[in-house]
View 1 (tube, helix red, strand yellow):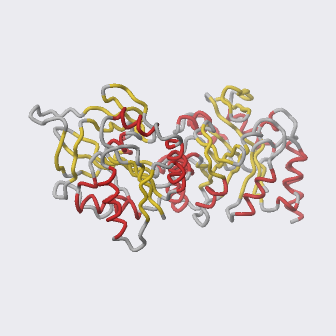
View 2 (tube, helix red, strand yellow):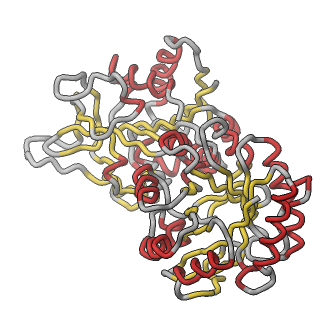
View 3 (tube, chains in turn yellow, green):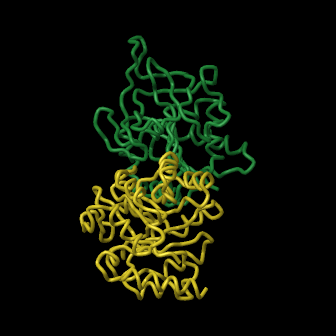
Length: 246
Length: 216
């Protein structure tokens, strides 16, 4: 299990949203690179970065902020938001992003994910964001009638590194992860699944390490790390202990 | 496997259906061609075809008059990633806007406006009616092994407007009619032709066959 601290970028700043609503953004750090360094210093081993403006625009918008983070960091970074063609995938991987996350394009253009994953095995992840089980696209502004499992199944055997499954209804609200839905997804596909949306406390971390969640490859922590509800040191200690015991 | 051809009162429906049936019959694994006004059939189809003849605004109105059809198309194509083929005005309807007499919203699957063609040579009439060769702008699975280029086969056009795509990467092929005319567009699981493949004989059938084989 990897615990990923999240940095969401809006106007070059590090923000948290509530339920993906751009109007409900709280700025937590004006300097994303400093925030990234702080997470690395706390002992996190992998960073999750989302270009929120990019997700809405359909192309990278906060590229400079991302590049500054990459320069400031020695731990790997996974990046999503506005990555919708092979050129953008290639460009980010060449710039040092460890893996890219394809969201909207995974729904609209499955061939892109397959092509990218074939060209860059284990460096392409799929971001599936669901509202009441149904996948949302275009920066979560548009909901579909398709389930996350239906879309995830398209990419079985395609060489995709991970599926990052976010429950929009919970994201940024600190009400706990939607573990049932995430575990169900993980048990029905062979691609590793990362849980996201709502992680609120050390109890969530414990639940992630419980036997019933053993198929989950990781989880993303956002607001809880910024407002102090989740202590990084104790969370990471739990993860390390679980790994040692395994 | 079923291919839904949407019947929304547009003119070239039957010739389009016939061409798809003919192409489907010649395949190893024949697909069922269904002409339909039922959004449920479109939602469940494996492929979706939108023909179209006439003015942009009238066609949009016809499509909207089928309750739930645009939603079913959006689900099937944009969320379930089913391949889509738009023909003539059926292709224009997936642009951002149509600018034929009035400005009408399209489905915005391929960003760009549908604008009047403006041939440089005054002797070239509008509407543009006739046979033209196509130049490949971007390689695509539906263009595989098609006889394109100046020595290739001809596609049949009858139109006064074309899709001026906002992104060059969404244009697969162009014709020349006193200037560039968008002939084939493609993005995600969507393709569309300004010309009529159903009236473009062997070339049209080869293109339709490629579409029926395409697994994006």
